[in-house]
Image (cartoon, rainbow, N blue to C red):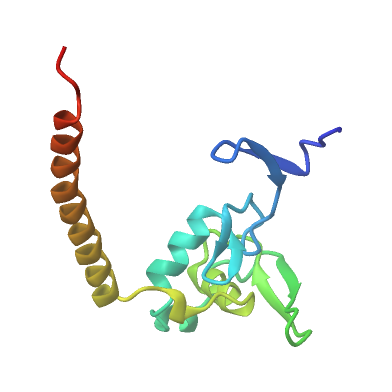
Length: 145
C-alpha cells in the first residue's frame, strides 16, 4: 500500500495517515471542522473571537488596491471578492468565514463557557473522591505474606 504524503498528513494521536484538508478561509492546512467549516487553528481562533462583532463587517478593506480572490459560494453560486491578504484584513476574513458556512451559533457564549468549566470541575472533584476509595479497596485485597 503506497501512501502519497503530499495528499495526507500523519495524525499522531491515531497513528495513521489522514487526508490532508485545506483551510477554506486562508488556504493553509486545516486541523478539522470548526464551527461548521474545515479551517486552520488561526482561522478558528479568529472566528471565535470575532463572530459576534458585526461592526468588523462594516470596516473598509485596507487592501482595496491589491488583487482580489474570487470565490464562489457553494450554497448559492454567488461570486464574492476578497482581498488577497485575507489573514491581514479582518473585514474580508470574517465575511469569508460567514460566506463559507461558519456558524456564529456554534461559538459558546461566556455563560456557556462558565457552565462548562463548572461541569469539568465537578467531574474532577467526583473522580478525586472515587479514586481514594478505589485505592483503599485495592490495598485491602493484597494478601499478607
